Image (cartoon, rainbow, N blue to C red; front, side, top):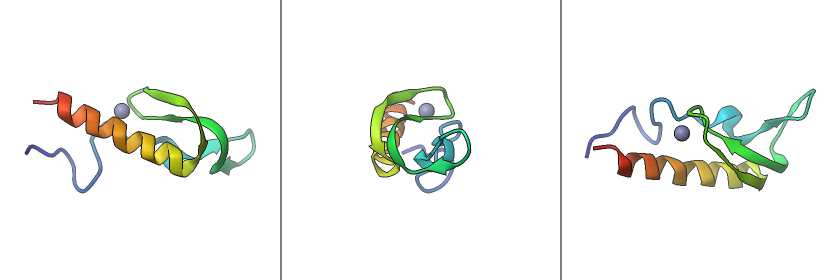
Length: 68
Ligand SMILES: [Zn+2]
């Protein structure tokens, strides 16, 4: 298996702000918002940072499968 980076990180695919989002004056983890990856992929709106982190894990798994 050819891992890029270490642990669960994948180069070029960081989850923006660990799933928190900017309300206009601060970052919050709750509330409906899409997860946004560094590669530009966005999820559907999700209810919490934990849900966005779950989405991002799945997103990275998919990328890993597509890479040779
Ligand atoms: Zn990505």
